[in-house]
Each structure stands twice: as C-alpha cells, then as structure tokens.
Amino acid sequence: MKAFRLDELEAERVANDGAYLQFLRERTMSAGLYALDAGALDPQKPHAQDEVYFVVSGRASITVGAETSRVGRGSVVFVPAGVPHRFHHITEDLRVLVVFSPPEG
Image 1 (spheres, rainbow, N blue to C red):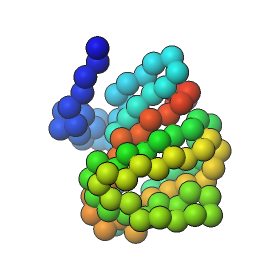
Image 2 (cartoon, rainbow, N blue to C red):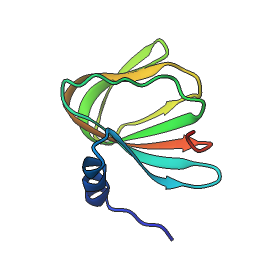
Image 3 (spheres, rainbow, N blue to C red):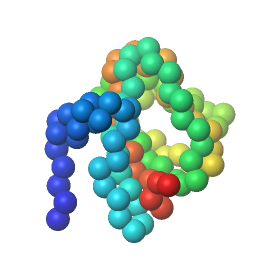
C-alpha cells in the first residue's frame, strides 16, 4: 500500500520550489499535487493524457475547451487528452490533486 498526507506532499512541493509535485507513478496512471497562489497565472498546455482534477482547497475558475466553471474545495473536473485548459481568476490559493491516465510524460 502507498499512502500519502497532503501536508507532507505540500511541504515536499515547496521544498522542491515548484508548482507541481508528482508523488505517484504506476503503469496506468500518475498523480500529483498542483499549486497556484491567488492571482497567479496557470501556464498549462494541453496534455497527451486524460486528467482528473480534485480541488483540495482554494477558489478559481477553470476553462476546459470552450466551457468555463467556478471551482472550489471538493470540485472534480475531467479534462480529456489534448483539450486546452487552464485555471484563472484564482481568488484563493489553489491546491489540486491531479490524476493522469496513462501516466504523465
């Protein structure tokens, strides 16, 4: 079994000085923690993998293709492979669990 604590993942992400920390990689999927502070710009480009976002904390809008939605703690968003997407109008520091399938890059 592999088990993780969000506070420990956040500390590791901060120690590595990056917005994204991949903490799990398996044959069919990978998972990471993505962080964007209030007011930040999301530099994402479309990915070659399907993604599921689970918002752990914060508030923002997300645009996936031509659709935009407000998200906050507890929101779950599916992003199909190859579709442009980004978080924007981030009003509270955003922490998001990301699952890629197949594994990212």
